[in-house]
Length: 132
Image 1 (cartoon, rainbow, N blue to C red):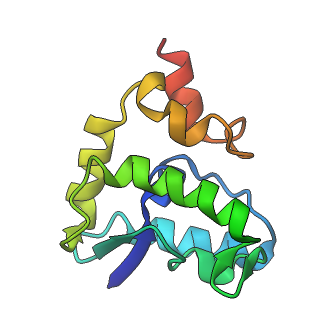
Image 2: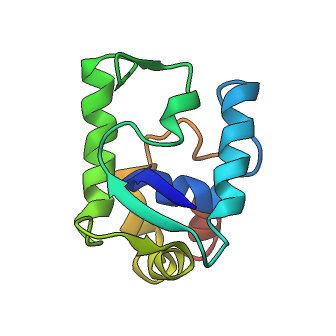
């Protein structure tokens, strides 16, 4: 299976526990989340709408809500993509191991996660906060 994911969605998938914008989004997120653990899954990285965005009610004209919000999201993606080669496809299992190595403390995700509306429910972010 091939997935296309935004940079910041790699972190979102680490902390996903069933919350989302609507039922359709949650179902898609759960499906993608289960695929990330398969060695047969490959991931291409982007800073644009991806396989999670396609089920988001905030996606309008391939942008997140509006141009201003989209730029904020893109900056979150770019913070992640600075640390991972986005020019190639990645084996999903290996990529998520790399994510754990790179983003392993609160400081490493502060520019990405701090202003996210989900950070209080995100298991990944909460784990990093508790490891201070």
